[in-house]
Image (cartoon, rainbow, N blue to C red):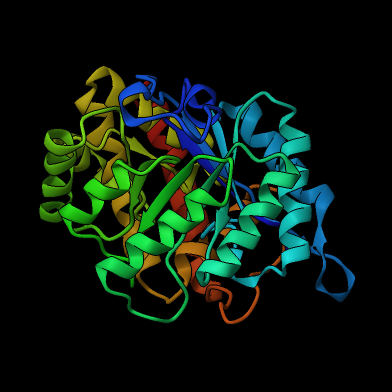
Length: 334
């Protein structure tokens, strides 16, 4: 197993955004906007199922060399749920050491409030530049409880926090406004996919808490929906595809940035849509299929940890064919 990194393709000025002081008010938020992708590193298991840090570092290094602007370490695709606190701290520190200040490192935190605060402390001690706050564990909380959870987390750390909306953490526009007014909370990553709700959140924050609150498309294969997200005011996204096919991910991002609809549509139709349909063939494939892709590209990051499972052999074969197809599409556009 090798802890995975998520790549943020968009963050040209990510260090400015993630490195600012926790007490920066919304009115003083920087106008920096990400312009590149982020990487989500994977890890491989050694004996006794310990993460293989050499492989992990290699994946981080490959991502940076390929053009990643930020590293999301030990988050969703990086199997945060499967790591012990000690493994988490070790992997975040390895990502920080490998990046060597070249790009910021955002670490995942989660579970209940007390544990989220503990993980935040571990990430801060390891040198992370920011936090991705994943949904609380198990319970379906009301808006008041969610707001209290994220505010207590932000108050307990000196790192800026991005809230991850998905699963059991779904915000109303009013709650999003309160989060945008909270010192230390700098953005919202959406993994829910409700465009109507996101449009209302963006509108509410824009009118009631104006500033430079950041929005990320955090769906499992964000490229598939990014044209729609960008249209409602969500210009940023993280790319899981970058983890195993960075050239494809970057080509799509460039197409979006330059208005090259022909290239964007060619990649959507010939690569991303088939990939999303393949990903839908198994539960947990948003993680395990991406990890299989990294292995196919020559880096042995091992298998996923339970309760996730490995993709079927036939699905891995289809993935290999699809990756080849994606690179062929790049050649067609040259």
